Amino acid sequence: MIDRVLAEDVELFERAVRTFRGTRGAGQPYLESPGALAFVASRGHEIFGWCWGYQLIRPDGFSMLYLHQLEVVESHRRQGIGRALLGAFMRAGAQAGATRMFLTTGETNAPARALYASTGGGLAAQGPTVNYWFRLSP
Image 1 (cartoon, one colour):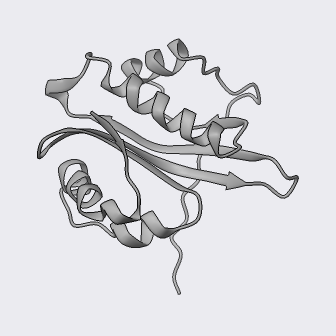
Image 2 (image 1 turned 45 degrees about the vertical axis):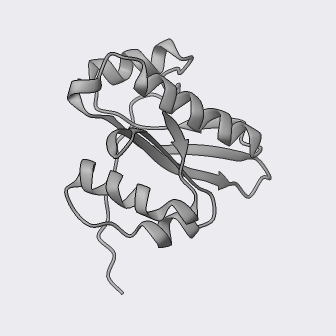
């Protein structure tokens, strides 16, 4: 079952964080942040997939989605769970007014790339890109 995770579902989200990150999360602040979108695939107490990201409002008035993470436990892969999570995330974003979505994945992550291509995603047309990470200190 795919469920959208709302602020009142923080325990479910925390279980997903433990499942996929192996650590305690900051579920309440994330779920209460503007534009946060999260979905969990579960049955009973078992968590077997999740995705999360943000709806971003741009200065030009358009809204877009950023999918930060989509993951399915290995024993449940190739059963349509990733596709269902992605579809739920995209529908929720579209209902909230987003007109585009972006994400990044590893160049060698063939299963993810196949999923994204099969659901209508296209490679960015801006040419080769480079990702940068910054450590921010208070």
